[in-house]
Image 1 (tube, rainbow, N blue to C red):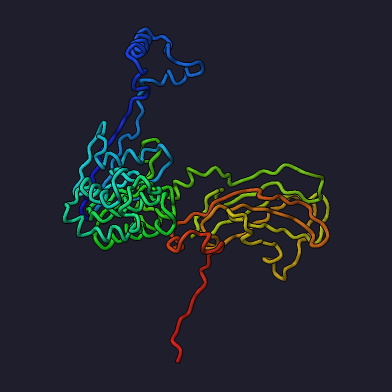
Image 2: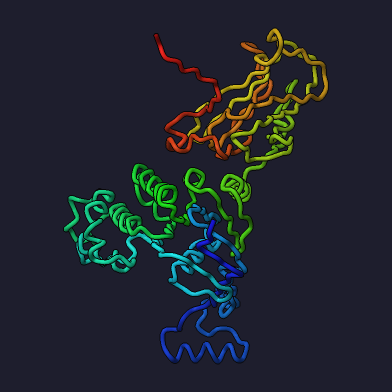
Length: 425
């Protein structure tokens, strides 16, 4: 497949510091202080750290090399400040690189900011023609597509109203509609879809899918919405501090990003709360490879392991682990007796124990979860109970549910149950 974007050792640096002191006298005073290696005379008390940074170089991108093929939908992910927007601005020719080079084959349409190229005093109709001309469309081409653009943006009622009176959602709908109907060889979309409502975002993703799959166009998509990246993109790159940390299939790159972003710990060590005959020691999440992991692949099994100490003989003990989703809804409760032959309760001699339960693949919807373990004699005594003791994430890596909307609209539990379908006589 032909390459439409070739990036080789691309770098971009900026020089930190103020543009000017406000007056020629202040600028000269600052310059003379730097010559003498003295403190900035205009700096306020407590700003010494910033003073040392003035004049230093900041590398927004460093040595990025990448090939993007025709028809590819490339997701670009990373933390704020990782260099995503800088990369798109260079590709859109908004700014130039400090080093390296970029080769682009085909017409580009970019949507980097809400209402880019819009004039606030002009109406929506006038801005469609203005913005379309800026993006490279001819007047006849804009006329031919005008009705389709307006229909997609859903601002027909306000098309002859100055856009300064538009909401941010109306702005982005009209701006995206113009860019998407340019019929470019390459469509570049930054994190602007977050402004629109959920229904509009769904239509935008559908439009970008059509542009890539039906028309063979190339799409570069920056988003912090991992469900959107997974459902739209065939491949993705992960930027970190201006470097390309990973490039590969979208699900693999998303997993790497979520591992980097997660602040959850896969193991929690409990402190003793009371002198109970049974007390928990640790609670742990283990991935399919039996390694401690706070980010679990939705398509892989995982294990919940609990260690505890018994200091006196106990009979008829049950252990339960309740799983809560991000909305604090109890997804399910895993009870030890449910997994034992005959559902016998535990009879425990003094000692240390490890209880573990294997959770199958395709069980939990992609989301963030909390575990609350408890040990008890039903209707008699509670030995130990820890609410929301540990948190972990189940990551979307190809379950296919994301295309139906956010997980909260579908449910909590996934399923892989077999279906049958046959005609009735």
